[in-house]
Image (cartoon, rainbow, N blue to C red; front, side, top):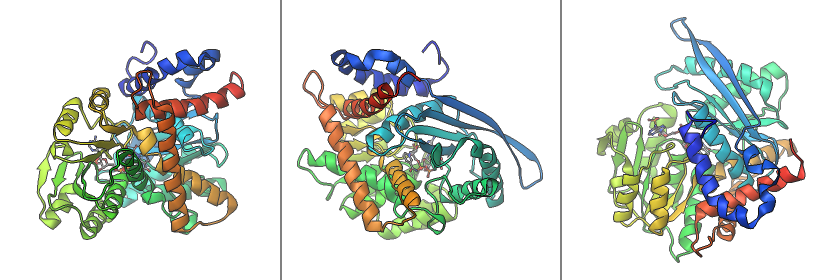
Length: 434
Ligand code: NDP
């Protein structure tokens, strides 16, 4: 707190982890040696840089770019790039801290990194987006490499933006290894990477429900967001027989009591991924009710999947969901629930999964993309999906093993934090004080 007083998101992420680690550390003093925790909460490196680009009117625009390389203990730095006006050091440090633990949970050899810029892609022309991405990549390329740091997408960075950045890095380095994951299939991407985070979140929810003898068949689900993670969470939930009632963005929520269908989802994808429109445009095209300024959490559901952004589900939202009988909350986004909301879910015995466990399918499949690139192979859709599914089951299992508290109650928060921490801490202890 004293060192980072102006970084609320970062303090939030760290305090959640420390609170669940404390009883474990008392029982396992070896993990308190060599100032392990103190080292883990300080990123190994933070790079900040100027990004200059020219808009469609010939004016020079300036944004601030970042790459935070948090931990290389387990493998090359690995994590997404976010383009959103809210990007700052607090947001990136919370994301990267979560990323290191999440990557460890996948059991694949990946360290943790995160980056981005305070650039707002909304309202920018395709040419402006391309020029920004190229300018960003021309500086980022000094800090990345297949065995050093492998970036991917995040909010505001999808296949189009990865393509522009990868193209520039390739050109500047005269090397074909594109370094990014989330690439297009035509230049080295993996099948299933776009689907992976949303699918993985639903696979995780399925595992949680099974511990209580439940399945997704016939359950009512609310999803927040309408981007990459939300779209594929909707798809997998539908495929498994659930009724998805909501999608949203920062301007409001579509509530569709009839539930999503494959045709409606295709329309949403057209509006968001090809026309770069808003969720209100989707609602207008289908004549669905759009609720301005409202989040999805007031709709009575069995399962909630927050898939938009950090701190989008507050204490009052959690109270409302619990009062309406929610039994499972699996986070597709990173830290969407506030600390108070999480406490309420756990006290009410709701099956609650933190993003670092339930949304790890995205980075896991990025890890699979790295393996395919290194071996110069392409796995089939079914093969990648089977590996993703099995990794999500493995993470769920790790959470069960480590999640039992001194009071005998199980917590996925505790399970994910301890399982991720132990993996990183063992690697750090083995490699000495660095
Ligand atoms: P997208 O950019 O594709 O979509 C983001 C969605 O969240 C949009 O619907 C956006 O709406 C909404 N959103 C963003 N900021 C806000 C806000 N302040 N209030 C309300 N809604 C908001 O991003 P992704 O789907 O890739 O990422 C969503 C979340 O999932 C993030 O937390 C990300 O870190 C996490 N994640 C993503 C992974 C991936 O593979 N893509 C992997 C693991 C986690 P609007 O257009 O109005 O801003």
